[in-house]
Length: 339
Image 1 (tube, helix red, strand yellow):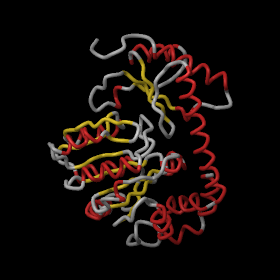
Image 2 (cartoon, helix red, strand yellow):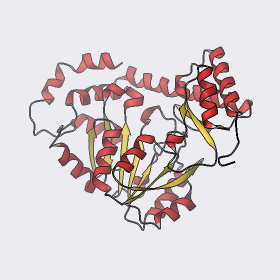
Image 3 (tube, one colour):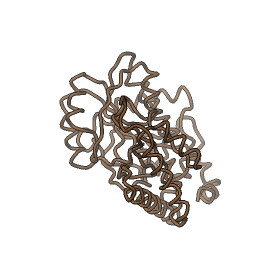
């Protein structure tokens, strides 16, 4: 799908590279993004992937010694970015609808400068923030000055609704939408929309570096977002990932193994002992990610992250092998940390 899009835009895209002073976002792409954004953004731009967006936002809003809030467990590169900035990270746990409200309310008494949220297909748990929880989070944040930074990393392959705190606090929300999982990591494009006080400086700072994200790649993204065959391919991918995830979780549940009932391409699987689980799974040829790097602070149970999106729902033997291996790993070793 990416090759065909490149072929369609190669000649006509040349009209977009005539000046260093052109708008950094193609008008057609800006129109498409605004029409699908979960709230009316004050500003909108594109950058070179979700982590590029996150890095630039962290550089602007976080200073040495600042407190910030993020989900626990959360995305390891964001943990690294925040630690590198010198921030003190306040962890907030998750339940089936998003951030746990009592923990968030307590965290906000510590005056953090920003709250980082994955609104759907949270990595690693797959949690989708519900509409009700979103409104409750916004109510807690309303009387603070904290920025809300949302990472919609799964984008169009997530089955959950595109929910955003920006629907309630648009002037303080920065929403990132990645196209890497839905349209391919080599596209290197993420859209950023929301608060002008953050996005305007981000755009200005980029002019002293890369300037803009290639308008040729932006034109490719326009093609991918409007071509019926490409849209259908993403729809099939979303459905396929959902089927694979459900098959894995159902199989594990049948063996008494606890896993997150979430969205996206990952499953957060509880195990008795992380190290024992990794050794057991490696011996059986099953690759998973250790849970510890995802933790802002230690959790009571051990976990591993399984990329369910790589499974094949039409290969029953392989699925049984993975479920059997995870079951063996989940039941080996101590049951609680510190015991």
